[in-house]
View 1 (tube, helix red, strand yellow):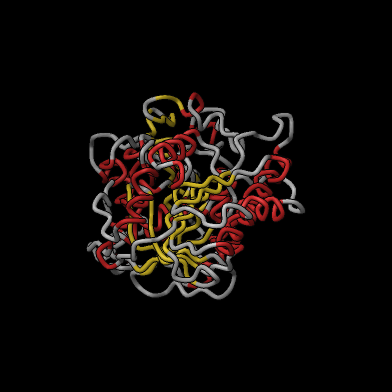
View 2 (spheres, helix red, strand yellow; view 1 turned 90 degrees about the vertical axis):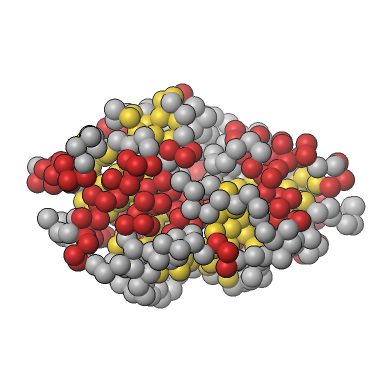
Amino acid sequence: MANGAADAAPGVSVGIVADDLTGANDSAVQFATRGWATSLVLVDGPLDARTPGSVLALVSDARAQGARAATASTTECVARLRDAGAARLFLKIDSTMRGSVAEQVGGALDAWRRAHPDAFALVCPAYPAMGRTVEAGRLLVNGAGVETTAFGRDPVTPVPTSDMALLLPGSTGIVIGTDGVDSLVHRIADAVAGGSRVIVVNASTAADLASIADAADRFGPRCVPVGSAGLAVAMSTVWGGSGDSVASAFRPAAARRVAVVVSSLHDMSREQFARLRSSLPADGIRLLEPPLEAALDPRTIAGWAAQQLAAPARLPEVVVIRSPDVRPAPAIDDSDRERAAVAIASSLAVITEAVFDHAQVDALVLMGGEGARAVLDRFGAQSIRVTSAIREGIPIGLVEGGRADRLTVVTKAGGFGTPDSLAEIVPELLETPDFPNAKPGEN
């Protein structure tokens, strides 16, 4: 068995591959707040992941992809990081197992095994701080099977079961137990010796995740930790960041106008928008929500946006660009559903660009991975310098490159946060650079 503590000096370089943009950022920020120099790379081109203490995150966009595409896109991202010299790999998956997780794990291992032939995946999507746990081989959200929650009804990537063995066919499940990390390491080693390539571990507390991270580190680079931002917190510690929060290094100027892009259809995102709207005076917020027909038609969306912005001439401090509440017909198949999601995200990006053409915007809040990626791509962004967390699991940073260069950006996964998160964050962006309620490094 390789021993990570012996094989790598503190401050190794880390590559992160995530299935969507907000997921990449909410894992990357766990490293940033612990002293790692962290960037989310949004463009193709040469990478250099060899600097000790650095983290490079890439987005595969695999969550809503079909099996073959998800495998290929994950393999490509891992290969880029491997070839750039990343010493460790973290595969970020959805904390509720939405999308093509099995294919992402397979694709990551295929690429990583080019450098580490005996590589295996150690999987735990738990994020206890957000109510996600894995208990007795079942994925729970606030104590309920994930399939019974809003994630089970997700219009793009529904989760049909909470059974991890069914969500990851062919995997081996093990428990942490009460007999310490050494025993967990032996159970993992036994599973690997028995031919297991994908091992799932239960976890219901931050301490459980710390044990998993410790065990993963002892196997060195051949062990690929697979999980959500919860596991990223633990891995950022055992892999040797400086241990000092860098949140204080970033204090953006108060924004005069904030654009909020809500592409997520999750119930939490919708409730967060509703509470933001009710917290502001009627003339303090403007909603731009295209009808479904316009959002699905790239030929008409720019005209729709221009018409909406023709009057009134002055936009308020808060502008919300939101995907339509109406969903495409449920009878469409997976490929049609994926195309519809991409088209809607692209339309939101067009509207956002029109807002930037119409008035000065000083900060962006991007809710939902597909919309976030579409907006940043349209603006020609090259990367995000990830700096700190304005709330648990909600990172803030700076756009690098393109027309939004140096713009403050907050990203949020659809189901993350509390109902009041948006109503709290937006006024902080407008009023003060100090973010008194930010909790960097909380887990």
